[in-house]
Image (cartoon, rainbow, N blue to C red; front, side, top):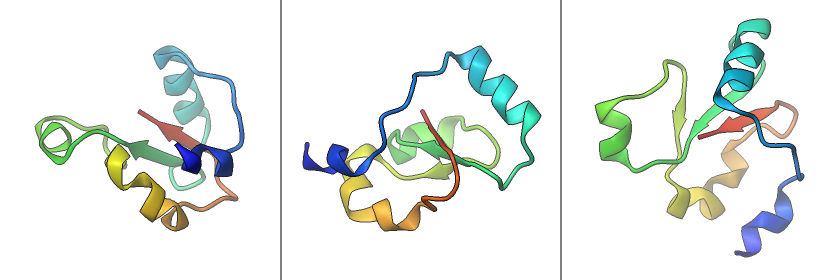
Length: 73
């Protein structure tokens, strides 16, 4: 997967660590990225999450703000 070369390696977060990060940071200062399929997103999602299904990610990387931390799930 060539698109991985454009991402900065980061430490994985547990669900609890992600919740704590989101609680400590104002919405809009980070991107919450949902990489699941649209039907999964419609069924349940985290408020404020942006849907960008994993197969579309290489074409849509330009939509992400590189200045903001991104939490993908």
